[in-house]
Image (cartoon, rainbow, N blue to C red; front, side, top):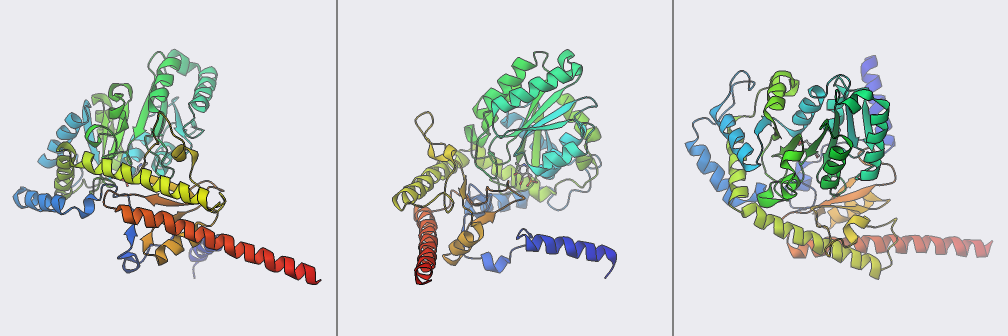
Length: 431
Ligand SMILES: Cc1ncc(COP(=O)(O)O)c(C=O)c1O
């Protein structure tokens, strides 16, 4: 074994010992399980109607295979037409398609912040933003604020304004990176408050909010246009990211922004410049998904999805209360159980906190359901969970049995620890 291979083996062994080694799942083992883990929120990847539309459009598409190279080398008609459609649909001055959301975030954050600028992000921001900022000229000026906390963001921005005259004079810029719907927690960002704060603290307009709508695309907002559109903030954020690989059953992503930033990305975003652009068939697939957003299908599916979300949250909460299940075994975060503005916040992503995510996930699997355990380092220590992703295609029966089986598992755990405690007591009394 070379020294390189022994170092690599040791690192993997260490992950193994800490129960955090990542592995690909066996595709056969997942077959037939009810899907509570993919990002296919609208179940479009299984839609016969969408499949038919896609195959029909493919038949008549002038180009289907490959794309010939980087966008800068070969600018396909399909790519250009899609961007025009997306700019109009999302009410944005321009749109620029990337091969993935990861490429888009890396591309944007690695080149747009200039020397002297600062990047401020929610502590739960996606890894791709970190990767971009790390490669940027603002890599030594990046700061995290507490998740979804407008006061923490405000304190941080005020401190930066105090410390950095360039931010006060407007010579330098601050970027605030947030997601609209957070992928691990199903929390929703207070976007309006964040935008208002940025505008108030930076009256010269040099604080730029950038919103990643990866998980909100197709699910929230008019025709699935996302939360920025839902809140009417289109002209008050610098850029939005929408991805096509989650609810839209395709691949790729788009950055919606103004003309100068788009032009700059075309010139400086390495993850756009030095890669082959999406193949034509994928452009056709994206186009078909947008047909479904525009014709109201997605809105109908999303309404069903959000109803299922409330059903699951209510069912699980009732069982937890009825059976006196301790929060260490099963608990839902307060943002899902408290009623705000007369209604609960429905979300396709429901984290069920538990100190034993792997046994819970294994129990569900044995019952024919696939909901994955998520542990550190993907989420902070102490916040291990089984993340439930819900889909329009799930049935009410599946939702009810998911909640029921989670509670059954917890009751089994409670009984096992009560039996253990009883054994220990009996042993003590014999001594
Ligand atoms: C919030 C967020 N942004 C960006 C991405 C990357 O998107 P893509 O899967 O298209 O690379 C993801 C995917 O996991 C995500 O969750």
